[in-house]
Length: 289
Ligand code: FAD
Image (tube, rainbow, N blue to C red; front, side, top):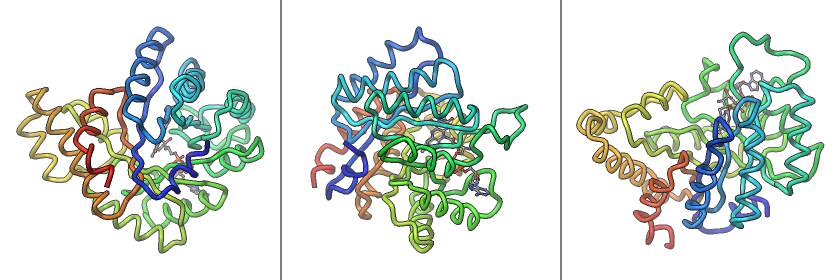
């Protein structure tokens, strides 16, 4: 089944995310995390993609496991900056042979010391989207950035390029993490005004430790509101309290989104079934309304 068909159903959908192990030794623990998350009945589970090597191979294996063994829709991420066009075509064909119908098409970060652009690589995610479409009838998702992508000085350019990306064949968008819902509402208004009409899944990252907050900020360049910083200041040194407060903060963001009419939400669950379960427990009645 295609994820877009699920998102178009008139009810609330919550999806989760898994990242593959860096080495094959970690494979079983990631599969165990996926197994636990599947019990929470997510709309789909996405599997991120690392640059080359074992990580990329494991994305397909884990996405297959989720689909075939757990009977949950899976979304395989695919990046193109760190691979040649030939390698990317091979991965797409492999996903097709495994019966994976849903791909999140990404450029990926440009590896340091690489000459980029280069004619043997796709330059933007929009080119990857066009390539995927040549290989079959996939449902294609893509990334978007409510606070703007770090490489773009002007948000207007970001939205113009996002429109081009969606027009190249994107079925739905997932946002970068954000911690202030007003930024998301403002972004939604601007992209709808720009003619982007596909479903947009806000990406919610439960921050359960001070170190995770630091990593998230480095990764996404997101702005943390004062309300969140006060939580970190008060509870950052007490791991169990910080975890509880982070789960409550993410739950609060989700409840506000749902109350404002958002129906589809993606949680960056980061191989943490305990965190996913705690949030789903907090929402147990809310998601059935
Ligand atoms: P693009 O859409 O290609 O955009 C990249 C930049 O180019 C943007 O600044 C854009 O505005 C600009 N641009 C686009 N088109 C044009 C054009 N025609 N002319 C000029 N400029 C243009 N990374 C991973 O390595 N693995 C993952 O699994 C992964 N999953 C992610 C999931 C989500 C939901 C998100 C939000 C990000 C994810 N990332 C992942 C990170 C992502 O790869 C990086 O943010 C990357 O820098 C941009 O990827 P993109 O697909 O958004 O690129």
